[in-house]
Amino acid sequence: EDSNFLRNNVTIGGGLYLDNSDFEIVDANIAGNTAFKGAGLYAVECEVGTMTASTVTDNQALRPGGEGGGLYIGSTPMVITDTLIQQNHAQYSGGGVYASGTGSAPVKLANCLITNNTGIRDGAGVASFWHNEMLISNCTIADNELLGAPAFGGGLFTSFGSNVQVINSIIWG
Image (cartoon, rainbow, N blue to C red; front, side):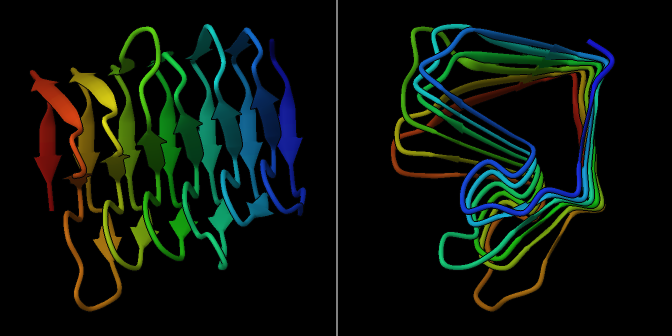
């Protein structure tokens, strides 16, 4: 609670690396981190994970990998609420959020602002891959930009058997 994860530079999980763990993140500031995957946060095969009232900003997922500038969520039923995810960059997919695989429950984004993130190929705001289940409710996904060509899904990209539900949300710009 009330923690800062700032200006770290590693291969995977710049701000936080969570593997096969339960976690609760409240009122965190995750900023200025770099990694090949999950520059802000990398969570894989965790049983339960939550992030509430946090800020994920200015993180960069670089090549080789380049997935999950802000958050990389792999086979983890994570619930993210009341969180600002902005100005993150992925040199491939998921500038703001990259989610893949199946967990015991869907990834949930609720009451989040996902804005001004960039990517090269797909999902500058949110990318959902490889049979991921996701629920996006009461979120604004706006002004995210893909910089490559070809490029797919500036705000939201879903592929490879993913199932994404969007409820009472705005996807803009």
